[in-house]
Image: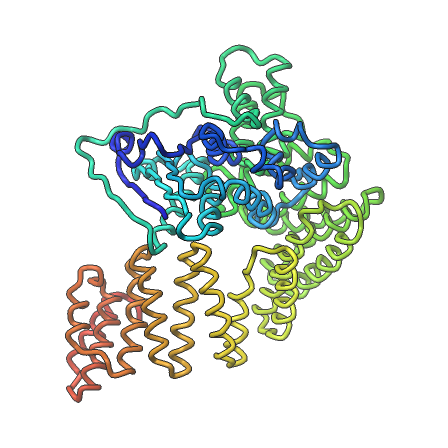
Length: 602
């Protein structure tokens, strides 16, 4: 269960639900946002309660050692090698971060869920919690039976969302988005705290946070040293570098970027090609969920990737960095001719003799994937398809040949299969799309924990006019979404089921599914989203003969539907009800036309 408490910072700081002394407190330094920082403080809180942390982490120690340096020191040499292979790779692509990070996230869930059963967990400030920790807390809710789920209380200051746009605001924006979706979960409680005085800025963030005995906190140590005005000697630079590298290894891209740019500001000469690479990759990967137009991002990426390439003689590193530059120059900066030249060079670098065969195939596959994107933008579809198909074959080689990052090959193949299916759909090659979706689904089963294929399968089933098969798929996906605390997917598949049932003539089922979609949208949707869901439900009721003009007329005077586009749709619906009742609908149709003209939507 979630309790979301919205209000100004000073009110949240005194709210009884957020100051409960018996609750576990989850909070970290919001300026550096250490990797998995929230759940690392939760681990410390559980130990303080007397939990046997060593026993809890032992089954997943290799994965959690990525985040807990003290735990890593206890591993055997073979276990440490396995840990290194599961970390974020400077020569990796971290395709769809969620897929590559999923084993680490599930390890945190497995270790913490039994210890959190029945607990009250407080996140006093949303801007002091990283997105990965929010995902772990959601995973704990999914893993535990309903009666054992913890109550998670989160304080959200809306003023923070209004801060000026910057490279860093995305962390809070992403967290707000995740929390907003939780409002769609049926038992979530939303509490609004009105300010009793003029709002004040949030208090300064504390650097000192509780860490577990297994956690040396290298990122926080690096941050503290950066904030010290004393000159940075070799030992200080080594400390900061170590914190930056450990943050990156644990997929802590915000902390990597904070520390790397902090070191650049204090001691620019300390940045070598490796650090430029980590800074560039961190900036690239933390923006995956955001607009490519984030302030200063294209220039920052361009600077650090070119600095990393400058003087680099290793063809593997050159190919990897070339892919990153190709995408940045083509997608974010819009220079497609230069992007194509960079993509050509990245492919050629990957083919240089001397690179381990598995790594060479892996790098060339990604270089071709980047070049395929540019070809597609240039409307050279045949060449784009050819590069994607070759990339698919290369990744099959990488999977059976030593050298490629073991944790990244399957996710990379999923990306290429998805790209191929997408290209086939764009070319109206539905048989080809089905083939690549089948390959994608096989990889999902091997990787575990992912089910992305349903969306496109529904489109293919509709094309084949197999509405029953589409309905069966959508209902399975809906149940999975409900069990996984994913209201956005619950809404999507409920709306799909409503439409599919309507088209099959099952108006009772259509009404039931549209009502489920509307229930979610009433909690988390925009007014226009709610209108679409409500209109779908009303049309199903119209066809069932279960709608009267009074209901439609009450919506016409609802302020939520005062816009001309909404008025036009509702007047058309009113006209249809009147016609069904044998009443002349001319007046309603005239009103609908007037509203449509006013809206500009013809």
